Length: 120
Image: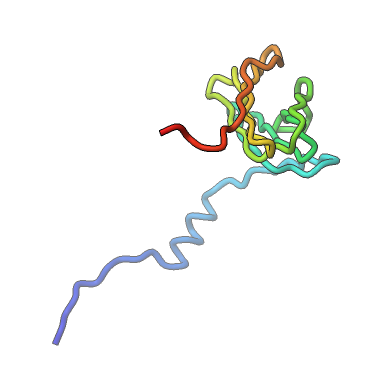
């Protein structure tokens, strides 16, 4: 006969109690005319979107207002990263290119093009 010690697993009551203590934040709907393919947070108050048409746009989360000017990369944006200090934006596009943008001046700093194979 095998005996095992009981293992505590929180039940539904514990989960419901936890949910009742949480504050539910309001949400903001950001509507755009084009398909969003990539998103990244910029600071805690903004989100950056990479779009099918190659645009990169920044939105304020609190009220959904677009911030700054639209950056235009050309090819559809498949991935996007933003530096923690919000100084740099790096989208990766369908053309196998990553571009480093200065988020403050909106200028391209570096353009890279994917090589067919890594050199070994």
